[in-house]
Image 1 (cartoon, rainbow, N blue to C red):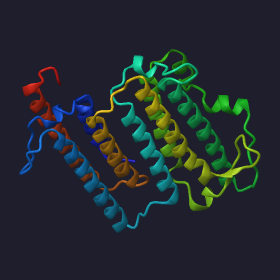
Image 2 (tube, one colour):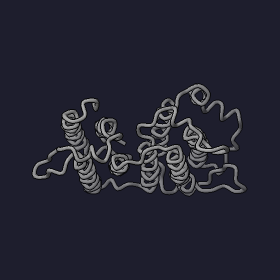
Image 3 (spheres, helix red, strand yellow):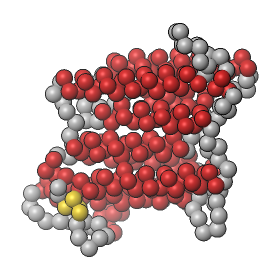
Image 4 (spheres, rainbow, N blue to C red):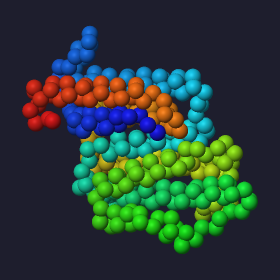
Length: 291
C-alpha cells in the first residue's frame, strides 16, 4: 500500500482542524470561485481524494492489475482502521482512560481488546496460510510455545501495562501495516483454506480476514458510544474529517498489492499541505491561538 505523502499531509490538516467550532468553519477562506469559508477546505480535501481513487482504479485496470479478492477484503479492513483513527482524533490520555459507567470499558480498554484480538487473528491466519502452502493437508495445532516464539521481541505486553493510549495506537498502526503486508498476496484458492481457532470447527481464511474488519467496526462503535457518554465533542469538523479519512482509506485500498499513481499521490500531498497552510493563515487572522 503506497500513496506517497498523502497520509502525513492529511494528518497535518486534521491536527489543525479537528477542534474547530461550527462558527470557525465560517471564517473566510477561498478556493478559485468558491468563497464558502474554511468549511470548504474540508470538502476540497475530500473531493481531491475521491478524484484520486477514481484515477488510481482506472490506472490499475489499464495495467491489467485488477485487485484480488484478498486485496479487496484487506481494503475493507483498512477502511475500518482509518475510521477508528478518525473517531479517536484529538482525545488525550485522560479522556481515553475515563470509564463511562461502572462495569463498562474505557476507550483504552476497548482499544486493548481490539489489538489483542487482531494479534490472535494474525497469528491464526499466519499459520493457516503456512498450512495451505505446505500442500500436505495437515492443520497446525497452535501451542503456547508457538505463540511465544511468534511474538518474541514484540513490545505489546509492556505497552498494555505501562504505555499511554497514544503508544498503543502507534503499536496498532504498525501491527495493521504488518498484517496488510503479509496477507496482500493471498490467492483465491488460499482464501478457502481452513483456519482453526476456538470454535468447534475450522473456518476458511476468507472468513477470518473479514473478521479483522467486522470486529474493528464493532468496537469502534463501542468507543464512539463511550466518548459520547463522557462528553466527547461531536462537532461538524470531526464529522467532515471522518469523511476525509474514509476517502483516504479507499485510495490506499485501491493500490494494495501494486504501485500505481505515485506521482499523482505526491502532487495531491503537496496540494493538501499548501491548503493546510492557507487554512492556518485564515484561522490565525481571527484565532491567534490556532497553529
